[in-house]
Every structure is written in C-alpha cells, then in structure tokens.
Image 1 (tube, rainbow, N blue to C red):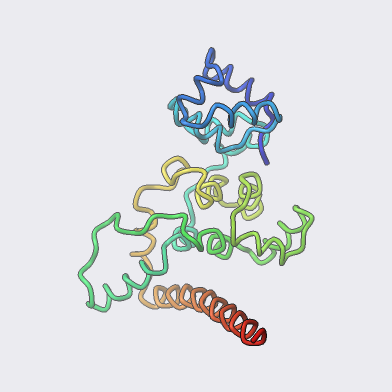
Image 2 (image 1 turned 90 degrees about the horizontal axis):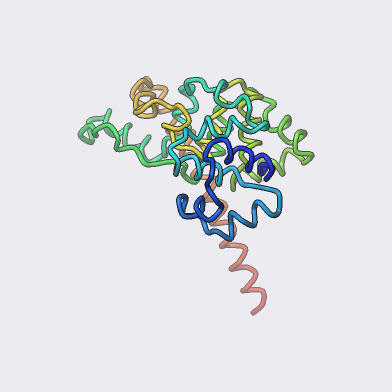
Length: 240
C-alpha cells in the first residue's frame, strides 16, 4: 500500500530538510515527474522512500519505520530462520552442493550463490514460513480467495502485505521486504553469508530432501509449459 503523500512530506522535511522535489529526484535518479505525480496523487511508493533513504544515507528500515504503517518494522527485525534462508537458494545451487558432497565438484568459495530474489523466491518463502493457515489468513485479509492469493505469489506482494505475512508468522518483519526485493539482505538484517552457512549446515539427507522439493517445483513448471504448448498445437491443428 503506497504511503500518504502528506506523511512523506513531513518525513522529508524532518529527515532531509530543505530538499526540493527536483533535488530529491536528482539524488535518487527517479524522474522528477514520477516523484511529483506520486505526491500530487497523494500516494508515495515505498520504493521511493527506500530510494530517498539510500541517496541520503539513511538506513531504509529506519526510514520506513517513520511511517505509521511500518511503525513496528525496525523493532520487529529478527535473525532469519534457516528455512527462510534455504528457500532463497536457487535450485541450481542446491544441486551443485549435492555434487560437491558427492565429490563430483570442487567446493566453491563463499559468495558464489546466485543472487536473489529469483523466479521462485516469493512462493518458496511463503512455503518455508507457512504454519498451515497462511494462505487462508492472507486471502481473508485481502478479501480474495486462497487460490487468487496463491496466484499472486507468481508475481509479487505489496510491501505492506509482505510485512503482514511476517507479522502473522512471527518472523522478522523485514524478511518479506528482502524476498520481494525492496530491501537488500544487509538493509533487512540478514547476516552476511547466512544463506551459504544455512546450506552448509544441512545434513546430507536434509540436502537431498530440499533438492527433491525444489526439483518437484521445477518439474511442475516445465510440465505446465509443455501442456500449454500441446494445447496450442492442438488448437492450430484443429484450425487446419
């Protein structure tokens, strides 16, 4: 949910006094018209606040916490769970670790994990933290069906919903903002090399279970693509 423009103006007056919209635009690299239109329309995107914070060397978590909607954000930061960290490791990195442990590859150096968010980041994160009723609870919060909420996970979640998901599950309130790409790992309080350490802490059997789960997800994706191609081919064949 975008932030109220009057809140943003009060915030900018307090945090970066004397800065005009044009100066903010120049500092952030966001077009002047974009910032101006957000203010005129009364809704400023969280991404704009984060960009301003970065440009003026304000911790983004602290900046967002200045707004009523995210007042508990900074105080609600906790270490990420191992399940969250593993969920944000690309399946190819999981397979590589399997091969490393099977002595098929030389161990790779820390920092070699693929960057995230990746294509499956959001869905994988939801699966990792779901106590069993998360999709139902969030669907009710949004006034949509569970299937509609699940379909949204193929795209992204608004920042406020991502934080609400974290509130519901009791994890760090910043985690959803990291997984959706609004904040970096460092900005959201995830320790350096945390994902790599979580990967290395898996036992061999746990690693194989994770690999099987991630491959199952990929299999469903590729099956869907093949099914769509078959349907398209049948359609054109029927047209003659």
